[in-house]
Length: 370
Image 1 (spheres, rainbow, N blue to C red):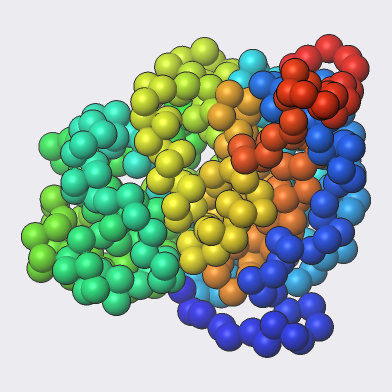
Image 2: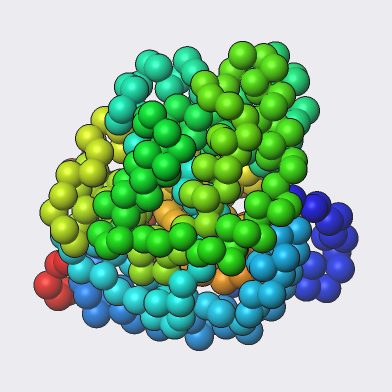
């Protein structure tokens, strides 16, 4: 990705602080009342929260659409969709939640899950790695510094190494494994966006170079050219915000798709995938993301972000304007707000009412649970 240096003091400039905006935080009582409930708040509360974030963040026009892939540069920057899917099957959506866009790097998480299901916990850790590089997602230097090991499945080197492990005798069989697998996560048949695929294929020289570098170290299981092509295809699958929320809810619910009831991957694979997401899901801003949002998530340069609240559900946001790391600006702010409003931060807690001198922080808003 072409990287642009932004002046963090310039008015409206995207910066590392995009998810530190104090306006994104819900009031303390609302946040505490929703903490550690084990489920999402009632339907009315979730729908009200989605309506509120659309209104609250619609006018944030910071960032710019990805321009290193020509077709992404033509995206409508004002598109804005948000969805929340509960592990029990309820899906809430607002805004442009049914608009289709290419999944891009979000595919990395789900292809990793499929490969982990096939090869197992120890094999993927040994062959791919799960540590953050601390460097940009398309870094060649990260490979060299780690003596040819890809380090993490959510940066491009690790994603290429993961894709090379996809089972199948032919490139088409491997593609169908990926397409069918991601379709099972979404609960419907996903299709290739041919225009995105053609545009990315014409501009993916850097990814092919990374694949060739890995191959030179003996760290790529298959031919670098066909591996890069399969990786480009997986990034070109068309999804909606609603789809991503369901895919996130599948990881949140032990691998069971909340719409179809199909077991896509095992609970152990979900655990492995979410652990990897926590380390590098938002590239070099992943630590900042975890500190502020408190959930594993994955972004893509088309403007999508999917976030997973284990045992509860998935959140997805689509907004094409990106910050300097390739993460949706509005997507980060929306997820930060919903994390507090819906009690999803994995690290949040309140004093136990049985502790001496403590009382409960307050009841969860009344109404039928999801």
